[in-house]
Amino acid sequence: MVPLWMYLLVAAGLFSIGLYGVLSRRNAVAILMSIELMLNAVNINLVAFWRYNSPGDLNGQVFALFVFVVAAAEAAVGLALIITIYRRHKSVIVEDVDLLKW
Amino acid sequence: MTVHEWLFIGLFFALGWMLPTIPIVAGKLLGPKRPNKIKQQTYECGIETVGNTWVQFRAQYYVFALVFVVFDVELIFLFPWAMAYNKLGLFALFEMTVFILLLVVALVYTWRKGALEWE
Amino acid sequence: MDITAESVVFLILSALTLGSGLLVVTSRNLFHAALYLMLSLFGVAGLFALLTAPFLAFVQVTVYIGAIAILIIFAIMLTPQVTRTNARNTQWVGAVVVAVVFFAVMVSVLTPLMDDLGADDWSADFSEEDPDDVPGTSLADLGEQLVDPDYYMLPFEVASVLLMAALIGAALMVSPAIADDPETETGDDESGG
Image (cartoon, rainbow over all chains, first blue to last red):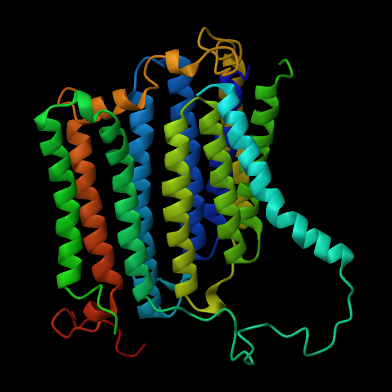
């Protein structure tokens, strides 16, 4: 039997990897992929807590389901923004998109 | 779902990995290797290849992928709803109709705007 | 922890998830990173299955691997080759420090709770009990609650509105038919670029 804290440890590791990716990548698509990793870590946590804490209740599963929906919408709009930025600036490197920077 | 059903799924994945891997590895190990310049070229219907493999695709493909993603997400709600259909009343049917209609409105709008037209 | 079939499967799946997750943020080729992302998401799907949430595992495979990862690969193919690098920026050392500190904080929070979060009445051990008996795992219950006004009817309908907005907004942003349309041209873009 796998105790709950091991799932939480895996989720924390995945979230840290995603955090590193978000902070250290230059390519906007790579940053979006790291965000997907972080969302997955959150989903592992939600499902693990649902399973060990309140399996009679559907809250955890439904919450994870809506995270999927939001992740799909976020990826769709985020990638569309990246493609639009590429059209205007001919670059998907986030440092190059500094029009609003002081 | 009992443990036996998961074993079947595991068997399925094991077979799915083995079926393509064994011919590739066996071909590498058993086949004779006498390469020359023409043999090493990329095979593309027998014609000589033109340009780089990693070409840039048109942005229009993205719109179709987008429509696919949205209706794929719709499926995750449609599926449990269909499982419970016999227990649900007319109101649930109405709710799902609203859900699907909103997405159809989005599809029709993008279509009418010309985003799905291929130039 | 006793070595059971479940713990072995758990260790394999978490190694798959974390290992390919690391490769996502370290591989030089962005396209390879996207493929490793799919592998990592597949490991998460396996963890869902191990937590007796087969529907979520199914959704993970169809929506995340089948749709979102494909969308990401599309976006990579739509940007030209020169930008397809997965290079790190100048602050990557700081990023390592932040990630390690975050992980250390998480571990320090978890360590004192290890005994509390250990064995429970509801074990995830699927070989001992039939998960169909566990209340709340039935797909029909999920469908019922999803359209029940007392439960999740509102978020269910709002999700539809969100998807509608995402589809319209993203399609209009990307579609060249609209981007080149003089009526929708705002006129404030950089004409020099």
